[in-house]
Amino acid sequence: MLRAFANAFKIPDLRGKILFTLAIIAVYRLGSFIPIPGVDYGVLRGVLEQFNATGIGQILNLFSGGALSQLAVFALGIMPYITASIIMQLLTVVIPKLEEWQKEGETGTKRITQYTRYLTIALAILQSTALIVLIQSGQLFQGIPEATNLIPNPSVPIRMLMVLTLTAGTAFIMWLGELITQRGIGNGMSLIIFSAIVSELPSQGNAILQRDNGEILFPITMLVGLLLVVGVVFVEQGQRRIPVQYAKRQVGRRTYGGTSTYIPLKVNQSGVIPIIFASSLLYLPTLLASIIGRPGVQTFVDTYFAQGNHPLYIATFFLLVVFFAYFYTSITFNPIDVADNMKKYGGFIPGIRPGRPTADYLDRVLTRITLPGSLYLAGLAILPLIVLGIAGVQFPFGGSTLLIVVGVGLETMKQLESQLLQRHYEGFLKT
Image (cartoon, rainbow, N blue to C red):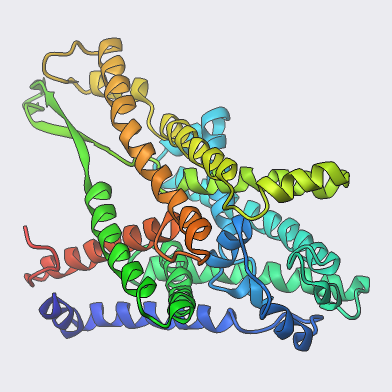
């Protein structure tokens, strides 16, 4: 692997792409520490000493690389873009025009991408406005009385300037991600999330180290984290390959078909999306309790849903992740469309009749392999909550953190390897 890294830097254009990607990530990390106007950072420093994010707040802070708790220019992170991308993907299923664009190839993809950008800006405006309201009311840092003094001058012009700054920060992050995709290595948006998550791991590890002075808890955490990384790599690479045979067909003087291929069905077909969906949905009780304002409802939510380590919260989270794993898989993979396309081009699964029987077979196989995939995903999602409830510390390896870090790392490594193999160099992965 070290030889592969050395070979990557020997190639001028590949070296330029790597250095360009690192420079863009450095710019992104710099923006995570530049403060937004209108916030009293003397008060903020005192608040952060008492702050411990949980639930959806922990995920948002993690995806922003700690910029949310720092109230920096990039406080919203890339979450508005992720939300907009998920919404557009869901709308593609229900809006025929978007489905047509998706089937048009590159031209349609560009249109969908442009609308995703517009939706990202709109969501950034809404989320930044909500964030300012949460800051002003003290609900962003719940349980800390000093948090209500974070904005000493909450006038309309100041709040508008804060919303504009946060929205511009999100737009700038989106542009940085597209620059990496076009001129760097790997998927830009994924690498930005990757860098944000990795930047928070040292502070989380230090918190565990300080808790027991590195005697038992820290070594055990590192060992479990290493085993989890190996397990996640194993599962994420796992797939069920459905063999497909294409019959020969004569078109003029040319013969097409007669080849064999396969349909790769991943064990974890939905990725990290179910965890994001479930986390967002579990934030609704807290939001509704703050809107209703009744003491009984607030007490119930504070007891069962506020901290994230209650058994009811963990069980609900587990079931929601399993449900959304099936839901999102059914949206992203349509067995009927796959069967129709195979039949159109003369393809068939050996032993299965083309058309409806093929669709039923694919649906049955997908349902079966999604069950262990959803259980694996749900178990990985609740692992940090279980550790929090037992040991009282934030577990850095689990849930969306580990999935994103391992997934993005594997994908980037494969892209680098393909670049090296094109130039007859040895890659990272031995085959």
